[in-house]
Image 1 (tube, rainbow, N blue to C red):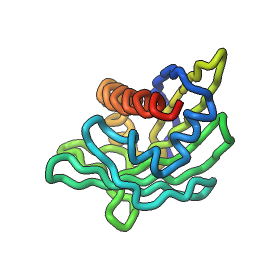
Image 2 (image 1 turned 30 degrees about the vertical axis):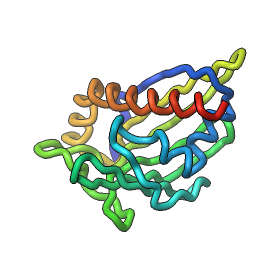
Image 3 (image 1 turned 180 degrees about the vertical axis):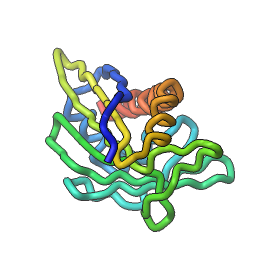
Image 4 (image 1 turned 135 degrees about the horizontal axis):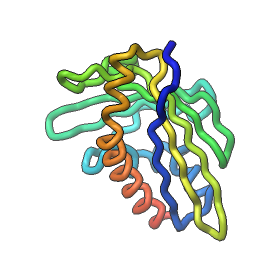
Length: 166
């Protein structure tokens, strides 16, 4: 098992209650509206939002169909969600990431915390590879700029979604 040398981290604030932000992660209909890379719609195939539950989804970019899966570890409503994120196949089985020429970790631990002050919720997300070899870890660490860009786009979509539920 790998040791955590470095963590990806992103923080974002939303003009929404902590419960509203948490609920956007806990509801299949909500996730379908905002989760995933910008301009890459997802279909929720399964959502079992509980510790040891899963979120299995597909995402389409042009003619390319990809799948992802979360395995939930800890859920402390409305403060914290921990999950292991992976690329998956149609059956929800973990697969190697589809990045040609890059060996990305098959499993990434994500820890999301939410705090609220005066109606503004701060979302803080950290991630790090687990069960990864040195090459996979190095690839993960080299992709922080790309991950920041990707998560920024996803969180932009969350911000737009939250405007519709207030």
